[in-house]
Amino acid sequence: MTAFDHKAFLKSLTTRSGVYQMYDAENVLLYVGKAKNLKNRVASYFRASGLSNKTMALVAKIVDIQVTVTTTETDALLLEHNLIKQYRPDYNILLKDDKSYPYIYVSNEDKYPRIAMHRGAKRKKGDYYGPYPSAGAVRESLHFLQKVFQVRQCEDSYFKNRSRPCLQHQIGRCSAPCVEHVSEKEYAQQLQRTTLFLKGRSQQLMSDLADDMEQASTELAFEKAAELRDQITYLQQVQTDQSIEGVRGDLDIICAALKAGKACVQVLFVRAGRVLGSKSYYPSLQLESSVAEVLGAFLPQFYISAHTLPSEIIVNAMPDDGDVIESAFSDYAKRNIKLLSRVRSNKARWKKLAEQTAEQNLEARLAEKNTATQRLLQLQEVLELESLPQRMECFDISHISGESTVASCVVFDSDGPKKSDYRKFNIEGITGGDDYAAMEQALTRRFKRLKSGEGKSPDILFIDGGKGQVSQATSVLDKLDITGIEVIGVAKGEGRKAGLETLIMANGDEKVNLPSTSAALHLIQHIRDEAHRFAISAHRLQRDKRRKSSVMESIPGVGAKRRRELLRFFGGLQGIKGASIDELKKVPTISAKLARDIYEHLQNT
Image (tube, rainbow, N blue to C red; front, side, top):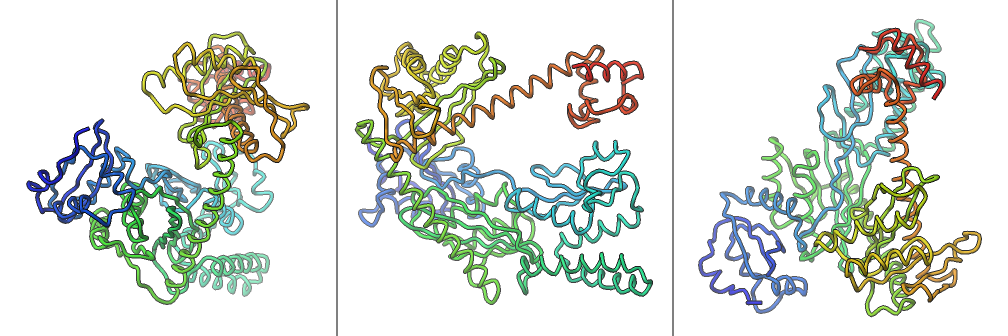
């Protein structure tokens, strides 16, 4: 490989701001960076001393550098983010969790609006409150609102087809607007109180409730007054638990901790003065060596095109280009965004709490990592491997009486389960219940892709089964001329009890029984159990899909359009099965005769 001539490259490099991209000999993008002065920044990688081991490893692979000049540093930051997101270079910090955050949605077009959890694009007309750090945090808030204000949370299709109050009304969690047990005026008042709470205007809400309670007492409506008193009590309790004194707006507190080459970033979400919860991230470190550098790489990826920007972001260390990040966020959000590291009073206390949480979570993560390493070391010793296994795959087959056969493939690396690499294979064209044929088909499909250059090769291939299953695996690998993979069967022990498993080696003759206390056996059990869980989940999904499809498709006179109308109207197959003839007649395109035919068919199926 020809060494990169950095001296010649730097002679012609501009001093303007921009983005640089580093490539290896196979034209694979290694790293993307931004710079206020491209020449000075790129030159820093090639200085004679002071480079970290990871930086030197990066520089050793460089054979080409491409630059893009930008008008401003802000433009450079945005371009850098887009390139990292598109190409995911190995030497950049990469966020594995880019799933959108959930919100609480309040519809505003219905006679009796509903509240519900929402994730994804905000296409429906209504108001959105959040984001919340997890679906669990949303459910907790919805549970509280349901108990206090009794605003409906049911689906519109369910709501429109009620003829009597549901269980939620009977246990005091809904005012039953579906059968008009509550007037529009009373319901609108409860909805207004709900939105005041979601907006963080708790003081105004409690003041209004206190006025209403006093009026109810004056009018001798003591039950109503008691209900309002209970609502005030609930609100006072939740405000004490969640509020930050002196904070009214939206802010995120983001603190990072570093130790032993690992990082934890703790994000604390505060909306309208209330703490909605927090979430931990563990980005993989490459070239970053300080908290400020980690946050400088983390913030653009976390917010740009991914998450809603609050008015303030508080960090425990200001990135070197903090002013550029602040400017880019303000331009992106089209409003003023503040990036702060020095805060006082209550904000300082919450920042300290987030920082301590990051440190504690990182300690726990490192402890788990050490345990995982010990398991891998023992597995290496037991199997007499030359090096620690970096990638392990396990296959399992799931079906019931041969129906909807599915094969699963789970992947573990040195960090544990790598769920982004999990795969399922819907098995077709075999005799029902033939596990050997199912395993052969799944392995052939998996390793044909590997042969064509798709995916990575495992160091160990675990098969949930005995000698016959192992023979299928080795036969597939031999046919495809794939070598260097250790094949091991995991046969269930006597009585299928955990700890009594037998390992079947590739030649089919050698068997290994590990003690039940073995860390290597615990790792193998974890991998095998995860493959089993994933296979069963995939099988159930496939089975339910087929059963639902077959039941609906077998109804005479009901084509694709009418099936869609029925499912949309009743919300699912169970709703259709539970519908009466009169209810079925309400569906567009369903006549009285067809409604009777559908009803009789489903009752007899």
